[in-house]
Length: 378
Ligand SMILES: [Zn+2]
Image (cartoon, rainbow, N blue to C red; front, side, top):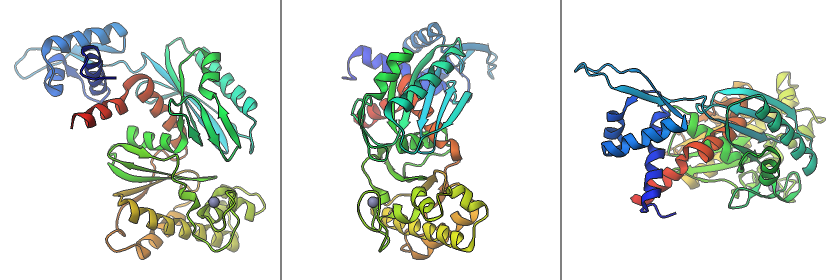
């Protein structure tokens, strides 16, 4: 798309206004024109368009110091909904959300260890159709977060090594059945999107680790995400231990949920952490130390300002996170040792909220497109 074309430029301005109105404040037409440096006629034209779409509304009269009272405009958060789906290793979650990210409906069911394509797709489609039937409001689109490599157009799951899925036209299958536009997002990228979308102070240059059944990593630098191919979980950290990738001593063999479970009679990490034996506790601490070592390497290479941890193992009792942080601070180079290491505030909902944040971006607000336009202007 060439942004110099008038229709594209108008669309970009429409999106800029919409994103401004998605914030917490109310603005008058004059405020919007001033803040976004638009002329008054085009601002009014865009507002008329948004009012016609029903996505914004005029409310009350805004009182100003001079006594003039222009109407203020704000987003109508329940005018349009999105559906987010998180196809996780342990659970699959589906959520119906309004434009502010408020969950209106939520459903979760366990994911099989090695799910068959047809079965899991059928269950997801069924849930989406059920959710869509429960509301009379329009649904702008569905976004599905899933582990693996995706096609460039975000329609096909090209490969998921964990489930051994290849070339699955997942988005099309859902779209055909639900009649709602659908796209896919890599699960770690989705969690990063959730962090950026819902966090009060998103950082510009950070590492996001999904520490769960498997270990994923995304590096975010100036709004660009590198995630699908990092293979952070396969950094060689230990001397022994056969990884599912075929190599020996990967981080996953020490710290991934599947590996910890295998060592303790298939108990989940959550079960282990609730009343651990000495041996189990030692194993979890060992997992924290290995994760810390891998983070030291990743932080040295990327020069990130912050590390954000998401996923089930990151959300275990504080003791474990504290252990990881202490080990990191003790062994990282002094110039890297004090960067913040924090949990994702969305906790166990990070994956689902990630699919919702991505759906809001893809189907309504297109903030990543605006960021792209901005970066091309500089
Ligand atoms: Zn490996």
